[in-house]
Length: 212
Picture (cartoon, rainbow, N blue to C red):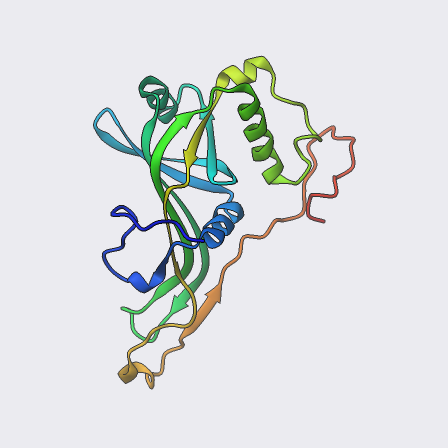
């Protein structure tokens, strides 16, 4: 299944790199640890990094109740946003400077983000955000107190206008440059967890969901 193509998700160039497959979009959103949320506040553009989690066709974003997007969304009952998630998979070295590039996967979603006010939905989304750090972590930690609930807000963005742009593979050197004496190829990049470092005074053993 694919997302519908709209004016907002139609590329102006390199159309062969753009797709709308739902499973591919979901995979990028689920792999990424954070996103960038762009919006307009008081007539000026703004962009904030924040953590997110996807549940079905909904992305949840968390932040302080006093932050710009949370205040704007609450005041208007919703906030027009553009959400972007990028995974950098490799650096592409070409024989020519012009064709140096990067291998990547990037999801961009447009829509109206709305505050989450229903208690059960808030609890479900908060738990999912914590479980994204490690499956089962929500049950393996103290829940959110009323005071913490008052300090933290959630936005809900439905995935309706979404596109995926990606690049993979070798450099795209011009044929006349293939014999130049310069190294060309790809340096893969990957975000990998390190060895967990316990906090001072931690007596509990490292849980199984942490990397060993």
